[in-house]
Length: 258
Length: 68
Image (cartoon, rainbow over all chains, first blue to last red; front, top):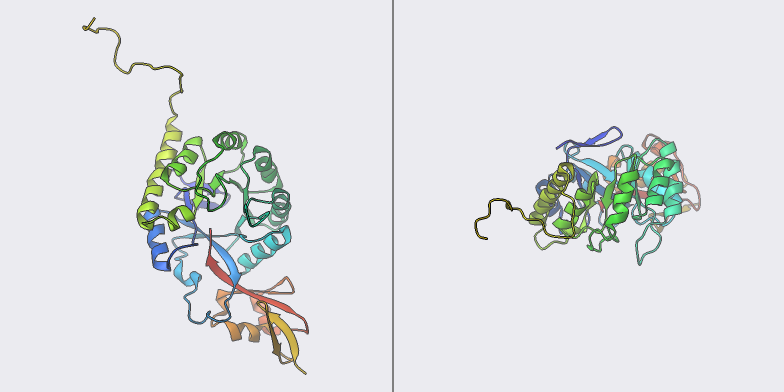
């Protein structure tokens, strides 16, 4: 399958996985391997002053030869905090990629779109490759692209909800108007959700909880891989038109049964 | 006279000649595993040992964590 290109970054897999909510690092690595991903998201947090010396650092766990690290600004409720987080990630040696999230409130975890646009503009000006998390709103997606986002990431459904692609029509409109790769991010609960996003023509899917909270994470990761490939192939193949009435698959001519 | 600062939200007292480098070394074994802010401004790793701290400074030492 052709790779996903986001500016200078080339991803062989169109599935991006998170690193949160796994029972341990071994389970996480096994899931990534099964998903066939080569790009993973991480968060930035304070060093735990009590336990830091005992814990394995995620930077030592992730094989940087194999995985592109996509730091997020999750947990930021203002443009300023998102800018700080992105700059810290770059200082940490994670490169210019950032998954920009500016969250509006804790209950919905929905994006604060105006603040996301503002932060996109600043970070793009500072040379970041911004992947901007946003609503499934075609207008917001276009404004983010114009503000300098290298990729726009509309949500399928709220973060961690597993509700799937709630507004496929809007995703389709976003895709039709997009000049940058569109990666559906958040809300993906199971394999068919990934397929729906990819069949619509999404350039990729980012998910975390759908794998990390599956009963068998590795099995679900494998399912997600196939779902992503199936959806992409179906999109490229071009589906048949839908019709209101039945249409026989066997010839009508030559029937001998009256 | 000690200098009072906050490191990762925790109030602490350090010697007046303390640097960011000393503070980082006191909380993590490997400088390459963290990034540091002093009063919301990035402190580049190369300047840790020459960056002093002042009364009331707010220092954040951050690293990677699992996330989506």
